[in-house]
Amino acid sequence: MDTRTKYITVVLVSALWVAFESVMVEGALKIADIDIFLVSSVPLISGGLILIGVAPQGTAAFSKGLGGRGWMWLTALCALSAAGAFLWFDAVGRIGASKEAILGGGSSEVLAIVFLSAIFLRERLSKREALGSGFVLLGVFVVLANTSTLSLSVGFGEAEAILSSILLAGSVVIATYLLWSHDLTALSGLQLFFSGALLVVGAMMVGVTHLPDMSGFGLLVLIGIFPAAGLWTYNAGLPKIGASLTSILFALSGIMTVGVQLAVLAFAPEADLRLPQSVALALAGGVVAFAGVYILNVKRRAADVSANDHASMEKTSAEGEI
Image (cartoon, rainbow, N blue to C red):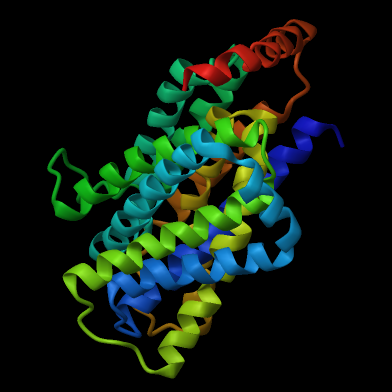
């Protein structure tokens, strides 16, 4: 397995982790009735501690070697991640995990990352990558769009999903820049931990409505496994295949979310989860999307390889531009 195929697979695994996380968040908000600030913050802190615990020495070395400029970018990264995560989770509670996925990671976040990456990271999609990306995004849209309610109107939950995507896109670009020269596990762990801590500060400022019982708190800690694994595998792809391609592949989390919802409903039919209007249409969309993944994974021509190698050589000069 070549490097490109390896990291495409890693990012697809990331999308699956986050699909599970989205469904668990939806359940925590609706079934367990846990406050949105707690759902947003506790799993991030828990996930951050997991990654920090996996590599404590690497995290310590990372913290010492980051420098003033590095800490400035890490602070900005965590602030964007915290705000984006809060709006994401709140949007899931308002409009459901499936609809949030198509408005957020399935469309606006991808477009924002591609745009910002072209400006700050000098990334360019090849013609083959653009074609495959188009199939992926079309498939995601077919799976998640509800034609009976599809309209240009945007409510509060929809606006949250779009704004969340823009903020998270900014965090992705900064993370890619930092990962060019810093440790993956340490950065991912601190990103989760400090993002969650910022949300706790926000909760203290506005006041948390109620604290969960021990089972609810245990559920939040357990959910932390998913952002830990999801962010680590997502960040792993950023410096290897680029932020643009990583975000496009990650858009498949929307389709995977539907699959996880169906699995949950098979075991718990009473669960209040919002599914797409047609499972058959969702299957067709999934075929289209994964055809896009196949196109992305086809061995590139020598000209494409040469162009990407040239872009990689330019990273050093681009690092000072962000």
